[in-house]
View 1 (cartoon, rainbow, N blue to C red):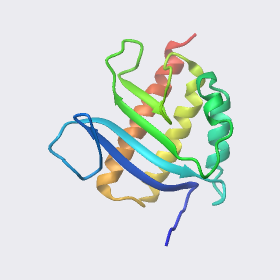
View 2 (tube, rainbow, N blue to C red):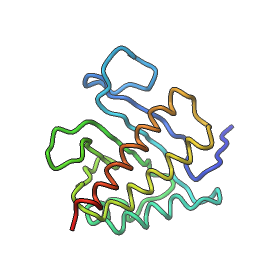
View 3 (cartoon, rainbow, N blue to C red):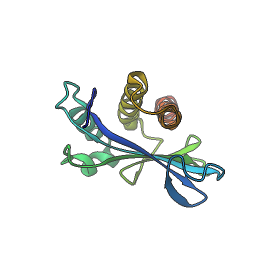
Length: 154
């Protein structure tokens, strides 16, 4: 039985630990390098998450083509990891494998969207506390990147 209270279906968290991607809860002693959340989005629950994703990605030139034909059957993947690149705001951010150009204010909308869906998951308390700490990390990192993109871009 699948119960959804938002337009986010079947969220899963994966962690890349020392170069190996594993489901959360495995190999806890290894240092985390990447947090990844996979989910599906729909408008069928009274929450227009799929439509909102299409709207915000249509305003970001680097993401526009990748998401223009996105459907509720397509996996939405969010990845965050520490960055060593000077042009990034401390973290690398990818949506469905596409690196987000952080010095582009057009990404503010997609970052705000990711913050909203992750906050919604946290507020509903549908996931385990262990999984929630990684969802919260994604929320905080995308919030930081989104705000920084507005602050430093003309």
